[in-house]
Structures are given as C-alpha cells and as structure tokens.
Image 1 (cartoon, rainbow, N blue to C red):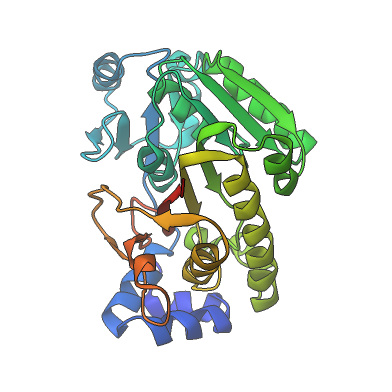
Image 2 (tube, rainbow, N blue to C red):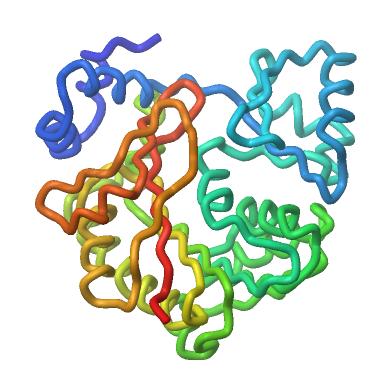
Amino acid sequence: MISVSEIRHRLPDAFLDAIDERYSPLTVDQILLGLSGERDTTLRVNTLRADVREVMRLFQKKNIKFVRVPWCRDALDLKNADERTIQKLPIYQEGGVYLQSLSSMLPQLALAPKPGERVMDLTAAPGSKTTQMAAMMENRGFLLANELDKIRCERLRYNLEVQGVTIATVCTGAGEKVGQAHPAEFDRVLLDAPCSGEGRFLANKSITYRNWSERTVQQCARVQRRLLQSACQALKPGGILVYSTCTLNLTENEQVLDWALQSLPLEMLDLDLQVPGSRPAFAAGYRPAVGKALRILPSRTMEGFFVSKLRKRR
C-alpha cells in the first residue's frame, strides 16, 4: 500500500490544499488512502438477464469470493477476482452482470425510477446508469439516453443491446439543448454531470489526475450549470431530478447546487440512502437545504461521489 506521504507527493498541490482546508487531518488521511489505487472490483447483477441468487451460486462454484452490498440488493463486492476474470465469464458476455463502481449506482437509487414512467439520462454513455434504470423500471416505460460524443454513443448502444434494454432511445446532442427540445416531458431526469473527477483519482495512475487544474474545475462548473438548466426544463412540474458528480470540490457540488436553488424552480429533497462513509454536504455559506445532499468519501470499495435530489416546483 502507498503511504499517505507518497500519495501527497503525487497528487496536485491545489487539490491537497482544498481538502486540507475542508477536513480534519484524520479525515484527510482517510480520503488520501481511499485514492491510493487499491479498490475492490464491484458489479451489478442485471435483473433483466439474470437472477442475483443464480449469479451468487455461479461465483461460489468458481470460488469467486464476494459480499452483498446491503444498500443495493443487486450489487456484489468481489474480494478475489478482477475485471478481466469476470469479463471471461459467459454470464458477463451475455449481459447478466455489469462491472460498475458502487458509487455510480447511487444516483439511480436516489432517482428511483418506476415502471411506466418517462425518464431521461442526460449524459448517458457508456450506459451503466441507463441500464440500471431500465432494470429498475422492469423494461416498462420510456428512457431517453442522451450522449454528446458520437463514439461513446456507439458504446452506449452496444451496452443497451447486450443488457437487454428495450425501452431506451439513444439521441446524440448537446445536453444543454435537450431541455429546449423536450420541454416538460419527463417524470424523472438523471444528470450525472461531467466533472473534474477528483473522487476517481488514483495515486498510482497519473492519467487520472495529470490534466486536473483549478481552471478545469471552473470550466466544469459552468457546463454543469447549463446542463442543470436543461434538465430542469425537461422535467414535468413536480418531476424529480438527481444531480451527481464524482468529484470532491465545493465549486462543482455545493456551489452549483446553491446556484440551482436560487436560479431554477427547484427544491431540495431528503435522500434516503444509508451508505457507509457518507456524510451530509457542506451547508455553511450556502442555503441550508444544500446540506440535504450527500458526500461519499473515497475508500477501498467506493469512489468519491456527490449526490443530490431535487423536485421541480409546480
């Protein structure tokens, strides 16, 4: 395991200064160890193709050790198998399981789409969240999966097909314009926004942080505000919006959320997610309702994440 001092030596100074200012020394060490580069392989059983107990029996026969994730009934945390091992299995190749980080399962659980509803994933590729929502909806209703990048869109279409999703329509376009094209059409909208990715930094993989800068953080926040405006426009009055990122800074999380509460017809809702290592968002200096959002600190099993749930006022 990489030491905390070695992790500090590798990660950007401005990033370290920000978490040092925000958290206690003990919590900072916890965060840095969570970014050390050692993380369990996790997956979600695709209930459109497979049964959780069937997958568990298969893994037991193959001596793949796992634990069930208490807050996500379809998720497994693997203890002695990597992604390559899983990718060789027919159950993976046939779409019965989807390799997915535990943190990235949270926004869909917060959104809680129901069978028969109209739901949009505003930034959908490569499809982990869209396919999870389709399973939650039991392939009943309508899912619009939007993706700006045409190459990533092809991966999205492939994953939807392999996972057996039949209710999704893929569209390629700027997320900032989707709300204008589909005003007040959706019961629920997921915006897992493009971000600076601090929660996914791995100290042993410089590719995860070498392009990070304070300027990038500001650029991401501007895009996120435009996407939130579009997402709100696409929602029916009374509709539910989940805004999430895989980053740790205030600029892309609490500040963007505070702006949304001031500028858009949105109100915060409580999150009913009992996740180890989670804590309320920072509310000091913002509207008190911002504190209803949830922060997930990086760990052996979880990437750093931010999740919030809002409702469009009627």
